Amino acid sequence: MYLLVGFLACLIGTIPFGPINLTVVKTTVDYNAKRGFEVALAASIIEVFEALIAICFGMLISNFLETNSIIKLVIALVFIGLAVLVFTRKSKPSLSAESDKQQSFFKKGLLIAGLNPQAVPFWIFALAAISQYFEFDYSGVYLVGFLIGVFVGKVTALTGFVVASSYLKEHLQESSQLVNKLLAAILLFIGMTQGWSAVSTLVSQSV
Image (cartoon, helix red, strand yellow):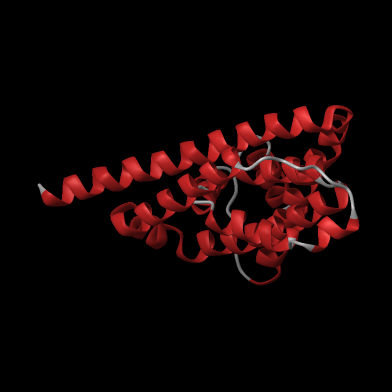
């Protein structure tokens, strides 16, 4: 039961377009399914830790992020910077082994997933919703089962994006540019949202 709930919660939470799944799509389109899966695997590992953090320190971290405007500003600047980088960089899709060696796709997945400010709040909300229907004991073997479900759910969902994006390679350059714009837009939206939240927090604290 714990494994199934973790699986379904993570699967459903990953389906909407966000920086992680769009990064998986972009990597798959620019390179190949193997590289896209590397990003997916890294993001899935981070997701397990984020779910665990939400279980152990969810409300404490949520309150800290909500009141700490400096952290919000840093996150905002990072995501706005990533958005500008993705939007202005010209895609050069390549399937060659040489270009693959020039960067670590696993590290890219770790970076994007680790900087995603929506993850822990999502799990706080998801755990609150789950608790309305189940009396869960997040300890011992139950916790392990839940986290395994989270990992499998994330891998499954992101692998679906890897498979689905393979058809885009029929028009590789055009598809890559479209994915770049979508990813840049989402990164910019997250950055501006965090920036606005940081400014609002500063204003409320100064009043």
